[in-house]
Length: 447
Image 1 (cartoon, one colour):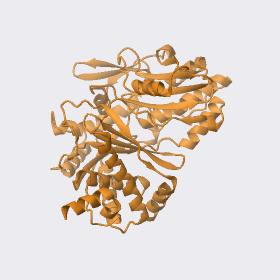
Image 2 (cartoon, rainbow, N blue to C red):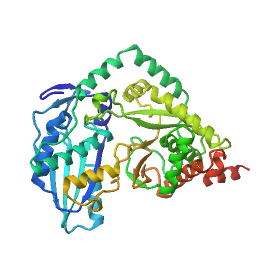
Image 3 (tube, helix red, strand yellow):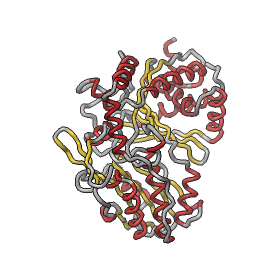
Image 4 (tube, one colour):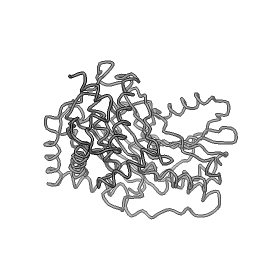
């Protein structure tokens, strides 16, 4: 999309723009030195000049949205500096959380910000973007390139950045062509057939569901230690699958233990980047898919893993069908096909990024670190599991709707997931129920 270009919003953008509260993506770093704010502003300008989406505003046009690209970015509209030297850690954390719910004026300026918090000799830096501008992959690209531009400004050189073959405007045109094709009609029919008669997940809520949902967010943090995560990778190779498939199977089993349900639908995200030409583009290509399978507590883990892998492959086969098209086909007021998501955040190579960030800022590796994910003020689903590898461990952030659940209720799901992943990696021939205390308790209660 070139300067001054105007185009309709994509399917996924409309979903984010029509949400009753801001849906944002963000990442936060702790840097052990004072960030040069003038250089940060110049880096923002260079980054926005490279990515039209970072110069895009959104105009409501009746029931639709139109996106327009501005000629250039104004760093003053995006770089926000806070004197946070006297703030307590709790006050800083709450301020960062507030930033995840900040409503942007979508038509006034591109909805994203670089928030710089001065902390004595150090700095906390948060990059936050409206989800209509970028997905997690695009956020990772923007973060990496931002620091490269920062280093280039500081050292008086040109930034070393990969070439970009196509922009998001080309993708929107491709998507529109695909939606109008016979292939999209066939894909929609397949997805609808897979989800036909799927029951709505009977989650053990502590409070009744309200419409519209409040989606006040809280979280717990499941953690898989280095030894268990190493076993997961080794077992995935032995079973000819991936660590994500094992994690997805463990999540299905944990949900079965938590809810008592056997026929389950879980959402996950696909990259949505149809070709390598879009690899380095900052934009919201992400497209959710619905994975449906059954969990038999008496079967071996290896059988569940194989079935989950087949179900995932079937769902990913239709990954090019815009999720919004499926929602539209279900009709006004129909619930989403899933109430819970699991996403593996593998777009950041954490160790490589920390080394890159250290090189760009001139700070030693030990003094430059990603801050653990800041929970959003609003949840997107009843529960959403985000998994990411950090320092050779698998860490999780289980976001949940605090309007529905108390923390102990969600902690049971979190504990069941960790137990399930440990069980499948220790003995894939063992029965699923034997590795999850919560599921064993249910079996004893039925007896």
